[in-house]
Structures are given as structure tokens and as C-alpha cells.
Figure 1 (cartoon, rainbow, N blue to C red):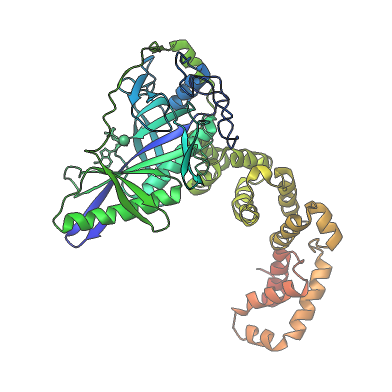
Figure 2 (figure 1 turned 45 degrees about the vertical axis):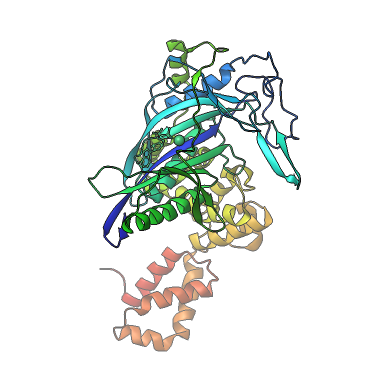
Length: 484
Ligand code: ADP
Ligand code: MG
């Protein structure tokens, strides 16, 4: 919702995502697809559109699209058609892109998004179709020339189109994160927005609640989730200003300038291309075998939503913790090893607290973590069996991060074992009470708040090593007398 000068406006968003298929070869040629290769080193005659070259469908890419469709709980169309989308641009040597138009391989589906306030919303998927990527124009090599790199030409993309079901930038961000997580679980797209394997066109409009949708604008190729959110916030505000000043929104394509944080007009839809789609005569309609689709369905991994449900029921995790942990498959796997045979809540707290903090600080992903689930588990075990206190454990964890040693060795070496021996603790308590005779008198006179102060002093005197529960019990006994 946006508060304009004339009342509230609802923001409506639909996203078109281009997701690069994980595949060693291109959609219609055998050329490789490695990211960052030398320009024009991964180009076959098909990709450069040499006369007489014919496309041959890569069935692995088809399988990836079907797998994605199934992961989006979508209808798989057993017959789909490849069309030519005609336009002229230097990075498109054939003069057309092979895409799917009226009959895409995947129809309607849905993605569930989890919002910060705990609510869950369903976002409709309109369709998913397969298409080729174009090449790339390089304008920054020489001031007087543009170069063309065709490495990307012909790489398989899945265009995933959402329904206009998103309301506001937060939902759009949640949708993108969730979709990326599902693609990564499925192993069909690496979701890397920096490398361009996930690109996003954002459609934005505003309207009054319960009234028809307004005219949308489309913001092309936004390259990070953060920028998607910024672009929507800017664009929605701009539209409110335009409409409230009595003017109309024009259907147009806009660009987001990340430096200025604003969108600007690129071309109006009137100048938009007429693509003259028609079925590609070089390719037969794509026919899938229903049993083959079934087999792919049976091979799908447990996806984030199901995993989240299971983590909540099996480990008793909160919606929030479960959501954070299942967002990344590696993290979820790490958690399951960590929780095995341990207190699951404790495991979740260490994982999402100190351990994530460490990874963030070091800029590491969990795959590259020098601290394994077993090593973190050892630390948790030392707390559970009373060898160290929770507070000392934080210290030990810091040392594990800094020195790369395991928890047991650090505790041994630095003499950090928790003191639970009654005699030793009693001696410390006695000394503290003696030193704090005036506070003790105040306590006896009724200032019961001071109890915490005594606990703190004893812990400090033991350099954090005294077992806090024992300290509490002993102090209670000494100060208040045995429980009746
Ligand atoms: P086009 O083919 O011109 O891109 P589509 O009807 O296929 O148009 O819509 C493309 C995207 O725009 C979809 O993601 C859809 O959800 C979104 N969209 C459609 N209408 C609106 C609207 N009024 N406001 C925001 N997004 C919209
Ligand atoms: Mg569009």
C-alpha cells in the first residue's frame, strides 16, 4: 500500500524471470556453456546461424524444464511448440530467437511465499517456456567499435512468468528468493544473478483496492533482489505522483538506474517490436511421454516447503527457524547432521546465531565453511554434558574460528572446563559473600534484587567457569536457607 495525497494505492506486480538452465550444452547445439569463457570460444555453427545449419533439441534441457515445472506444481504440456520470435539486433545472428509462444512446455503452477509477519501467500505461475539466449554486445573494448560475443547465443533459458499476484516490493523479494531456492534445490538453475543466470523483468502498476488494475510499466533486466525491491518502490511512487497529478500511466518499458535509484523510460510499447511469431519449420512439435514425466516427478528432491513442514514437526522448530534453515539445501543438510542425536532447538540456535555470524563475517558460504557440522556438534555436546557452560562455549567457538582447532582441544588447552565441584564453588561463594558484606546486609534487609548481583560476582570470580546452575542453588541455600 502507498499513501498518496488522495488516499491509498495498492501496488500490483508480476515478474518475468529468465533462468539459465544448468546444462553442459546449449538448447539446440552441442557447444559448451561454461561461464566466463574467452569470447566466442563456445560457439557452434548453429549458434552463429551459418546458412544450412539446423537446430537439434537438447533433451537434457527439456528434462530440466519439466523438472522445474513439476517443482512449481505446474501443468506439464505433453505437446508444445517452438516458435521463431523475429527481431533484428547485432547480437542475434539468425534474425530470430527460437522461443515458445502459444504452446509452452509448462502451464499454470504456483509458488508459496513466506512473509516477515508469518503469513504465507500463494503466487500463481502463468507459464514456463524454453527459449534461446542471445549473444552479447561489448561496447567497452574500443571507443570506435562494438564487438559481439556469441558464447551465450543459444544457451537454454526458462522464462518463468508470474501472474500479477504480488502486492508490494516485499512480496516480490520473497517470491524471487523462494523461486531461486526452488530452482537450486531442483538443480535446474544456479540462480546466480551476478553472473546473469537469473534475470528479472518487473511489471508494476497501481490501483485503488477493489477497482480494476491500472496500466503497468515493465522494468527490464533488474540484476539483484535488492534492486528489484528498490525499482518497485521507486516506480510505484512515481506512478502515484503521475496519476495524482491528473496524468496517465503509459504502457512502456523502463530501465532501472541502480546508481541514481530511479527508473527511466526506454521505449513505449507502441514502438515495441512486432515479433511476427510463427512455428519454427526446422523443429517438430515437442512431444513428451507421460510416463517419462512421471519418472521425473518421482525423482524430485524434497523441496523447501515440504522440508520446512518436516523440520517443524520432526525437530519442533518455529516457522521462522525452519524457514531460514530450509532456504538453502546445504544449510538444511548441515542442520540435519548437527541435530542428529542432539537437542534440535540448541542446534538451530547455534547454526543460525554464532555460526551464521561467523560465515557472514568471513564472507563464506556454508560449503566452504572450515567448521564442519561434526566440529560444531562437538561443541554443543560439551555444553550438553556439562563440560562447559553456554557462556564459555561462545568463547570456545570464537577460538575455533580463529585457530581452527576443535572444541575439546581448546577447552583442554585453555583450562575452560566448567567447575561443578560443590566444594570449589562453595569456597568462591564464601569469599564473595565475605567481600560483599554490606551488600549481603542489604539483601538480608529485604533487597532481594541483589541475588543476581551475587551470582554475577561468583561467576566473575570463577572467570566464567563455575556451573551457573550450581552457583544459583548454592547461593539460594546460603542466603535463603534450605527450601522447606
Ligand atoms: P507481455 O506479453 O506484454 O509481457 P503479459 O500479459 O504476458 O504481457 O504479462 C507479462 C507480465 O506482466 C506478467 O508477469 C503479468 O503478471 C504482469 N502483469 C500483467 N498485468 C499487470 C498489471 N496490471 N500490473 C502488474 N503486472 C501485470
Ligand atoms: Mg513481457
